[in-house]
Image (tube, rainbow, N blue to C red; front, side):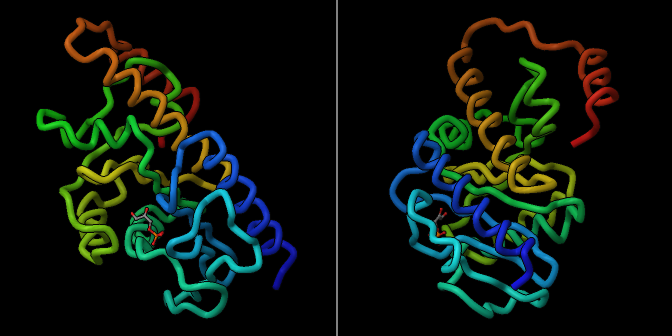
Amino acid sequence: MTINEQQTREEMARLCASLFERGFSVGTAGNVSARVEDGLLMTPTNSRLGDIEPDRIAKLDLEGQHVSGDPPSKEVFLHQALYESRPQTGAVVHLHSTWSTALSCLADLDDEDCIPPITPYVVMRVGTVKRVPYVKPGDPKSGDLIRTLGGSAAGILLANHGPVVAGKDLFSAVAAAEELEETAKLVVALRGISVKTLSDDDVVDLRKTFGEM
Ligand code: 13P
């Protein structure tokens, strides 16, 4: 194992524990993956994000075959689809965090643009958030649904299930998932209230200054 892989395992365990301690994940909900030189590291299926042991994290080779560690998350298809459709992706976080999941259940949500630009950080850290239709957890069709987006969104809501966020590395993916969750909370809190969003010019300026997600 390379030093880099060992560091990624340790960082994954640390960030998963932090998400769990702060209530972004409960029970055995959620999974996290990260790219390494010769494949993918992924949290084991049915594990609590609070208890991830670096040496037991599942490893998949470049063909997606499980080669070591505990069996990987059943949501491996979701993760793989994001790495394939967004080559800049270095890590993926899937949660059942309360407010993003609440948003994912709304009947009148705009599937192409789930989060209006009400604050700058969601624009800077997550970008446009899209929703894909419901399939049961672990269904390989979840990967096909994500591929239909053609890499156009780093933040995705799985209808009636929860958020998935891709980032350039573990830290960025976790930070973006947290940002999405807090913004989803604001969006739900502000429903039914007339809201002033950022202007189109503000959004263009943010993207120019901080980069496109
Ligand atoms: P795993 O335990 O297989 O990772 O599944 C948890 C989950 O979040 C399902 O959506």
